[in-house]
Image (cartoon, rainbow, N blue to C red; front, side, top):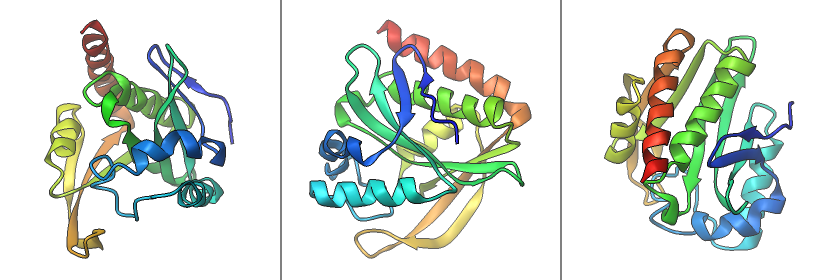
Length: 194
Protein backbone atom coordinates (compact mmCIF):
# COMPACT_ATOMS: atom_id res chain seq x y z
CA UNK A 1 0.00 0.00 0.00
CA UNK A 2 1.24 3.47 -0.87
CA UNK A 3 1.49 5.52 2.34
CA UNK A 4 2.06 8.83 0.59
CA UNK A 5 -0.28 11.69 1.47
CA UNK A 6 -2.68 12.98 -1.17
CA UNK A 7 -2.08 16.73 -1.25
CA UNK A 8 -4.45 19.46 -2.39
CA UNK A 9 -4.56 23.21 -1.83
CA UNK A 10 -6.85 23.17 1.22
CA UNK A 11 -6.48 19.61 2.55
CA UNK A 12 -4.04 16.74 2.73
CA UNK A 13 -5.24 13.16 3.05
CA UNK A 14 -2.76 11.27 5.22
CA UNK A 15 -2.86 7.57 6.08
CA UNK A 16 -5.18 7.09 9.03
CA UNK A 17 -3.87 5.61 12.28
CA UNK A 18 -5.02 5.25 15.87
CA UNK A 19 -2.81 8.28 16.57
CA UNK A 20 -5.61 10.37 15.01
CA UNK A 21 -8.16 9.22 17.59
CA UNK A 22 -7.90 12.24 19.87
CA UNK A 23 -8.19 14.70 16.97
CA UNK A 24 -11.15 12.85 15.40
CA UNK A 25 -13.14 12.17 18.57
CA UNK A 26 -14.81 15.61 18.82
CA UNK A 27 -16.32 15.38 15.33
CA UNK A 28 -17.06 11.64 15.45
CA UNK A 29 -18.82 11.93 18.80
CA UNK A 30 -21.01 14.81 17.54
CA UNK A 31 -24.50 13.29 17.02
CA UNK A 32 -25.22 15.59 14.06
CA UNK A 33 -21.95 14.72 12.31
CA UNK A 34 -22.48 10.99 12.94
CA UNK A 35 -26.21 10.97 12.15
CA UNK A 36 -26.03 8.95 8.93
CA UNK A 37 -23.25 6.55 9.93
CA UNK A 38 -24.32 2.90 10.09
CA UNK A 39 -22.02 2.09 13.02
CA UNK A 40 -22.21 3.15 16.67
CA UNK A 41 -21.00 6.67 17.41
CA UNK A 42 -17.76 6.61 19.41
CA UNK A 43 -18.23 8.37 22.74
CA UNK A 44 -14.80 7.90 24.29
CA UNK A 45 -11.17 7.92 23.23
CA UNK A 46 -11.05 4.16 23.78
CA UNK A 47 -14.03 3.61 21.44
CA UNK A 48 -12.50 5.96 18.86
CA UNK A 49 -9.19 4.09 18.93
CA UNK A 50 -11.02 0.77 18.58
CA UNK A 51 -12.98 2.06 15.56
CA UNK A 52 -9.85 3.38 13.85
CA UNK A 53 -8.01 0.15 14.65
CA UNK A 54 -10.74 -1.93 12.97
CA UNK A 55 -10.80 0.38 9.96
CA UNK A 56 -7.04 0.37 9.41
CA UNK A 57 -6.70 -3.40 10.00
CA UNK A 58 -9.01 -4.17 7.07
CA UNK A 59 -6.80 -5.02 4.05
CA UNK A 60 -9.57 -3.98 1.62
CA UNK A 61 -9.52 -0.39 2.95
CA UNK A 62 -7.38 2.65 2.37
CA UNK A 63 -8.21 5.03 5.19
CA UNK A 64 -7.22 8.67 5.48
CA UNK A 65 -7.31 11.44 8.03
CA UNK A 66 -8.11 14.81 6.46
CA UNK A 67 -5.73 17.59 7.51
CA UNK A 68 -6.39 21.24 6.71
CA UNK A 69 -3.34 22.63 4.90
CA UNK A 70 -3.23 26.09 6.47
CA UNK A 71 -2.98 24.90 10.10
CA UNK A 72 -2.40 21.10 9.83
CA UNK A 73 -5.48 20.39 12.01
CA UNK A 74 -7.23 17.04 11.51
CA UNK A 75 -10.79 17.94 10.46
CA UNK A 76 -12.19 14.59 9.31
CA UNK A 77 -11.72 11.19 7.77
CA UNK A 78 -12.53 9.38 4.53
CA UNK A 79 -11.83 5.92 3.09
CA UNK A 80 -11.77 3.70 0.08
CA UNK A 81 -13.26 0.38 1.16
CA UNK A 82 -14.21 -2.93 -0.44
CA UNK A 83 -11.22 -2.21 -2.64
CA UNK A 84 -10.94 -4.97 -5.23
CA UNK A 85 -8.00 -4.34 -7.57
CA UNK A 86 -8.72 -7.51 -9.58
CA UNK A 87 -12.24 -6.26 -10.37
CA UNK A 88 -11.03 -2.64 -10.53
CA UNK A 89 -13.61 -1.22 -8.13
CA UNK A 90 -14.06 0.28 -4.68
CA UNK A 91 -16.52 2.20 -2.55
CA UNK A 92 -15.97 5.48 -0.76
CA UNK A 93 -17.30 5.98 2.71
CA UNK A 94 -16.61 6.38 6.42
CA UNK A 95 -16.43 10.06 5.54
CA UNK A 96 -17.08 12.71 8.16
CA UNK A 97 -15.95 16.24 8.87
CA UNK A 98 -16.04 18.50 11.87
CA UNK A 99 -19.27 20.48 11.66
CA UNK A 100 -17.27 23.75 11.54
CA UNK A 101 -15.93 22.62 8.14
CA UNK A 102 -19.30 21.94 6.51
CA UNK A 103 -19.95 24.07 3.47
CA UNK A 104 -16.28 24.85 2.91
CA UNK A 105 -13.95 23.42 0.25
CA UNK A 106 -12.77 20.52 2.41
CA UNK A 107 -15.16 17.70 1.50
CA UNK A 108 -15.12 18.63 -2.19
CA UNK A 109 -11.33 18.66 -2.32
CA UNK A 110 -11.15 15.42 -0.34
CA UNK A 111 -13.40 13.81 -2.96
CA UNK A 112 -11.22 15.30 -5.73
CA UNK A 113 -8.09 13.79 -4.17
CA UNK A 114 -9.67 10.41 -3.37
CA UNK A 115 -11.35 10.05 -6.78
CA UNK A 116 -8.04 11.03 -8.43
CA UNK A 117 -6.19 8.43 -6.37
CA UNK A 118 -8.75 5.77 -7.34
CA UNK A 119 -8.85 6.51 -11.06
CA UNK A 120 -5.42 7.96 -11.82
CA UNK A 121 -3.16 6.05 -9.39
CA UNK A 122 -5.00 2.77 -8.83
CA UNK A 123 -6.54 2.72 -12.34
CA UNK A 124 -9.94 1.65 -11.04
CA UNK A 125 -12.82 1.35 -13.48
CA UNK A 126 -15.57 2.10 -10.95
CA UNK A 127 -16.27 3.86 -7.68
CA UNK A 128 -19.48 3.56 -5.70
CA UNK A 129 -20.88 5.67 -2.88
CA UNK A 130 -23.97 4.90 -0.86
CA UNK A 131 -26.13 6.98 1.39
CA UNK A 132 -29.15 6.70 3.61
CA UNK A 133 -32.43 7.37 1.80
CA UNK A 134 -33.16 10.08 4.40
CA UNK A 135 -29.84 11.89 3.83
CA UNK A 136 -31.08 14.38 1.26
CA UNK A 137 -28.02 16.64 1.54
CA UNK A 138 -25.73 13.78 0.52
CA UNK A 139 -28.02 12.77 -2.33
CA UNK A 140 -28.06 16.33 -3.73
CA UNK A 141 -24.28 16.56 -3.46
CA UNK A 142 -23.67 13.25 -5.26
CA UNK A 143 -26.14 14.08 -8.03
CA UNK A 144 -24.71 17.59 -8.32
CA UNK A 145 -21.27 16.16 -8.97
CA UNK A 146 -22.59 14.06 -11.83
CA UNK A 147 -22.57 10.67 -10.14
CA UNK A 148 -25.23 8.27 -11.38
CA UNK A 149 -27.93 6.97 -9.04
CA UNK A 150 -27.92 3.25 -9.80
CA UNK A 151 -30.63 2.08 -7.50
CA UNK A 152 -31.80 1.46 -3.98
CA UNK A 153 -31.16 -1.49 -1.71
CA UNK A 154 -34.35 -1.68 0.29
CA UNK A 155 -34.12 -2.37 4.03
CA UNK A 156 -30.38 -2.66 3.50
CA UNK A 157 -29.14 -2.12 7.03
CA UNK A 158 -30.16 -1.15 10.53
CA UNK A 159 -29.77 2.45 11.66
CA UNK A 160 -28.46 3.19 15.14
CA UNK A 161 -32.01 3.91 16.30
CA UNK A 162 -33.09 0.40 15.23
CA UNK A 163 -35.08 1.45 12.16
CA UNK A 164 -34.25 -0.07 8.78
CA UNK A 165 -32.55 2.08 6.19
CA UNK A 166 -32.77 1.95 2.43
CA UNK A 167 -29.33 2.59 0.86
CA UNK A 168 -29.13 4.62 -2.33
CA UNK A 169 -26.17 3.66 -4.52
CA UNK A 170 -24.35 6.12 -6.75
CA UNK A 171 -21.44 5.37 -9.04
CA UNK A 172 -18.72 7.03 -11.05
CA UNK A 173 -16.92 5.29 -13.91
CA UNK A 174 -13.41 5.98 -15.16
CA UNK A 175 -14.62 7.53 -18.42
CA UNK A 176 -16.89 9.91 -16.44
CA UNK A 177 -14.07 10.99 -14.14
CA UNK A 178 -12.68 13.86 -16.29
CA UNK A 179 -16.06 15.64 -16.30
CA UNK A 180 -16.56 15.11 -12.55
CA UNK A 181 -12.95 16.19 -11.91
CA UNK A 182 -13.63 19.50 -13.66
CA UNK A 183 -16.82 20.03 -11.61
CA UNK A 184 -14.98 19.28 -8.38
CA UNK A 185 -12.13 21.63 -9.26
CA UNK A 186 -14.63 24.41 -9.99
CA UNK A 187 -16.51 23.71 -6.75
CA UNK A 188 -13.30 23.80 -4.68
CA UNK A 189 -12.20 27.06 -6.36
CA UNK A 190 -15.59 28.68 -5.73
CA UNK A 191 -15.62 27.62 -2.07
CA UNK A 192 -12.04 28.81 -1.55
CA UNK A 193 -12.94 32.21 -3.01
CA UNK A 194 -15.61 32.84 -0.35
